Image 1 (spheres, protein in one colour):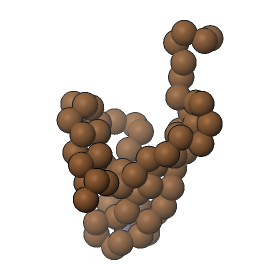
Image 2 (cartoon, protein in one colour):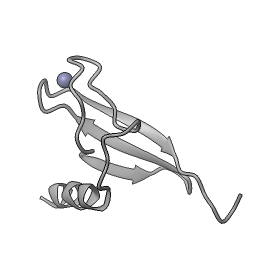
Image 3 (cartoon, protein in one colour):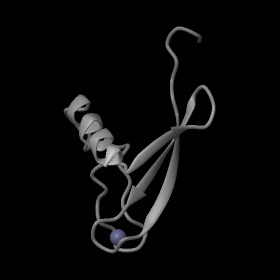
Length: 71
Ligand SMILES: [Zn+2]
């Protein structure tokens, strides 16, 4: 239940998420809409858990966050 709330919150704060960051399913090539969950691996690496609504395939992506203050 809490995961759903997180996803909705994430979408609401990103008015135009359909950009270059959204992955596609490696099995059926469907577009991912929102991550199921996210977790910080380090201070500037975040991982997202994606689950395909079409085929149910799950996978994880990792993203490096750019820091403006500590560059
Ligand atoms: Zn799929």
